[in-house]
Amino acid sequence: MKFDIMRDRLLDGLNNVMKAVSSKTTIPILTGIKIDVTNDGITLTGSDADITIQTFIPLEEDGDQLINITETGSIVLQARMFNEIVRKLPTNDVEIEVSNGSQTHIRSGKSEFHLIGSDASEYPLLPEVSTDQQFTMPADLLKSVIRETVFAVATSESRPVLTGVNWQIHGDELVCVATDSHRLARRKTTLDQLPTNVNSVVIPGKSLNELNKILGESNNPVEIVITNQQVLFKTENVLFFSRLLEGNYPETSRLIPEEFKTNITINGKSLLQAIDRASLLAREDRNNVVRFETLEGQSVEISSNSPEIGKVEEQIQVEALEGESLKISFSAKYMMEALKAIDGQDVIIQFTGAMRPFILRSVHDDAILQLILPVRTY
Image (cartoon, rainbow, N blue to C red):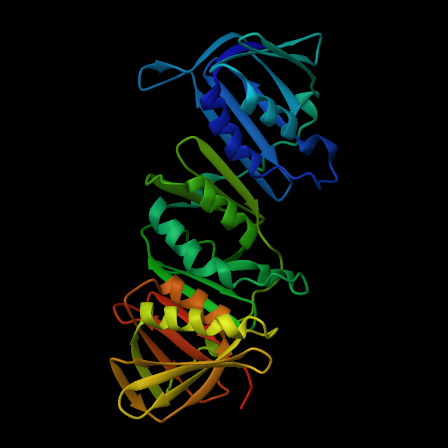
């Protein structure tokens, strides 16, 4: 195997596949990156058995020659070392040659590295995914859906299924739900040609975070294929496979209240900033709790009290306040993350009582819904 390649394009490809490589894997060959050279171009693959990322670098792009192939072949190279070497090479022209089975020579300018590779045939094969049930989603919409839900997944492994986001398909509607049992984030979106044989899968939060990084600034459509154990996201030159989480996701729709005693319409940005300020004092207290109280005359008070440090109080005008007066306490972190996810100007917050879950949504649409459980302090 022997080829020349532009270093910056090789680095772009490595940046993608390195996101799937873990040093903690129990399968030694997965600490490596597989390089396949064919007459069409070069394919790089990285995997940690849960996530597999494959990226393809074509021979030429927009009329520029990226790769010059002398001899095809495959090799697996130690991922961290290969990535560091390529990052530090002196020129943009890189020549890679494999001789005597696995001796790999990397040359650039006057610099030459010799690495011992592994046999590519030992590298696990990609999961088989039949593409008859695939649907397409614009990359920016997919990134929004991830951003608006993934922060609410559970971080503890005590209930593994809650560390993922539940994607449910109902007719032409995709509903994505994440919960850690203290809060819930839900995002609905309507799409064409959703698969009919899938109604609910759970995608690990970690996978969606890595996918979000790979989507970057691209706005091309992403093809999504869901099977029993795997989901595949296909973009221009990248295949992103993730295993699905096993187990039944809890039925969350019954957690969302239908009737409310207090409705408040408020500017999301000013509320977020006030809670951020109040949390400065709350942060020292281990549970980071902020109090929220309705006042006479269309305003609310945000306050926080830390016995050793001091207290903070701030009043905010609201745009509308209907229903019963209310005192409630909640986690500043949860509230701030919910407000950031809605990212709109005005939000409606609907309460059913001081110790009952409350919901936030945008004034403009209810595609995004955030639910938070209060904290008992009063």
